[in-house]
Length: 355
Ligand SMILES: Nc1ncnc2c1ncn2[C@@H]1O[C@H](COP(=O)(O)OP(=O)(O)OP(=O)(O)O)[C@@H](O)[C@H]1O
Image (cartoon, rainbow, N blue to C red; front, side, top):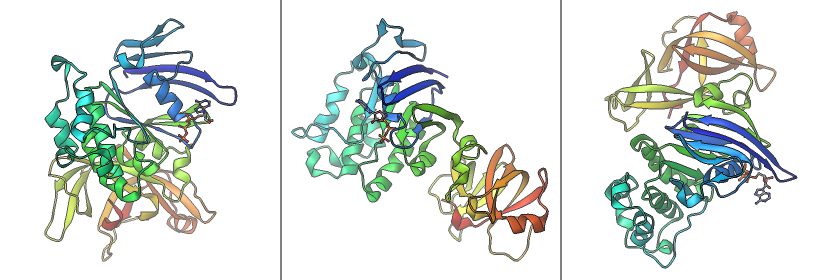
């Protein structure tokens, strides 16, 4: 844990009390509804707002007591805002150089070519900001932040102002950033879809309070949290690619020693991937069935069950090795099958249901 923080914000009509120890690697999402305090917390971490508190990053104290306060420009962080804030009169290359040239050569930990390649910026370098799309502008903003060689990247709803097509275009770049740079990222979002795709760790905020924090899978499947009670309740499983493309166009993964087939994924063999599985797409059987169209049949153990989102349904939690999966089934099926905690079951999942 290398980002240690404690802040007490009191704005009269809004109070934020946050005490957190966050990991020094991967993507940590600050998630919560509008007005829950996500941006306020991010701005406190950046030093853009000053409220009573304590903040240290990788052993360096950025804020402590009334006296110690490292100003924003002296904190080794990059900040990407909702709207790309590029200089309109400068070409993309010059916008990027603006951040890069501020960092002395010997202190650069992220190199020019690395960023251009990672974010696919080469074709944009000679254009002006108003000659590129919103998604491309956001990629340039991200590149500019990275070229300052930050040790921590803060992103405040970087996709919020983009249309669905631009979001789809930029998400793979964010995934590459997560996977290829050893740079901790704090990512503010109120989109669970984005969080599921990008985050390793989740902080759930509500009305200025930290409701929960932890590993993404653990929070998505926690009984007491609201994630298990939505139409799109899902889990994310960690898997490894075994065969990227079979003859009939499927990809074979290994999840805890069991095969899982998904629709084609352009990821090389041996790499780790995460697979989202919706609770509504998982059926259960007492024994491995034959002659069915479901591609996947995983041996699991029933952990527990709880009421679902309608009176006719149950939400069942299943253990798959060390990982937890969710299944939504009818209460009638659960009664007919006499489901009990500890029972061995077979989770049936359509290959096409995975992404
Ligand atoms: N500069 C400010 N001065 C006073 N109140 C503010 C200021 N900025 C935000 N607030 C208030 O503080 C509360 C938390 O706002 P904040 O922007 O941190 O929430 P958020 O979770 O990021 O919301 P959103 O998802 O809508 O961006 C809100 O009630 C907001 O109206």
